[in-house]
Image 1 (cartoon, rainbow, N blue to C red):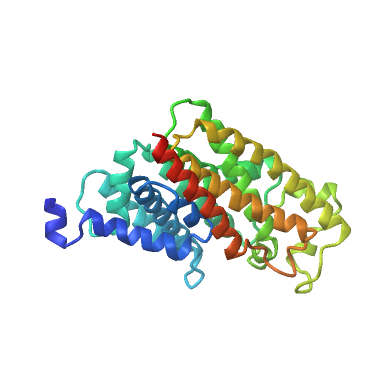
Image 2 (cartoon, one colour; image 1 turned 30 degrees about the horizontal axis):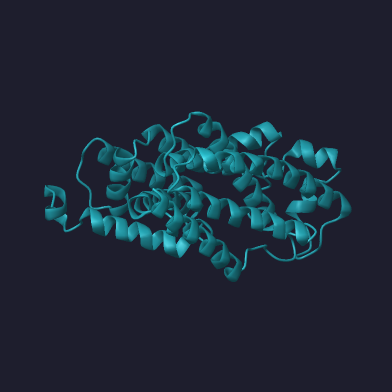
Length: 308
């Protein structure tokens, strides 16, 4: 037991247990992929998820003003940076993430970028104007910070040796985030956020107000549906990068990556099969389908271990 764990009662095992609990409770799609990882990698990725979840929660807590949320986030980041410099901590997430970043050689700059994605939402909310993105290039930058960076962290935990994996991981994150954006169009609009690029709204003759102020549950118009189809086609293109990434990942981690890609792609497929009506109901992958995907992943994981 380290001096730190002896002084405050928190051990590394307990810290990782807390992170696993957070991931199990909150990571609706991610956690099924985590299960298909060997334990050390599973612990690490759960700690990263817990870190990301905490940053997100601090930024999105609408019981506080934007200014207060920024103060809380800054204080939390100051605590994290102290831990990075070797200060002892009683925060289980910080303890676990510090171990994970050291063990798997994860650049701390990636975590800084992840938090930068969170603060983008805070900065834009300050104006009171709708949170929008003018072009797809602008949206890509946002998706990079909140999703691609997660992918770049994940592949360091999964293991890879060819640097070509990094661009593919970046684009895999874009595929996942575009899927999230499609699923959450109605929910985001209710929070004064429209992530569909304004240039795309204009080209499809969709007024911004039709998304921000629409009758609850009203199905998409023909123009709105065409807009959503175009974003889905972009996501489908990026899912090709997800498939191309798989061979670059260490064999024992590959099943987890396959589970993650399969669940997210299944979510996009459900949106497509619902004819892009993302306003009446929020699309999700049924539990039985997730479990079936996980079962395949666990079988592949067992086979990978036996073949090693």
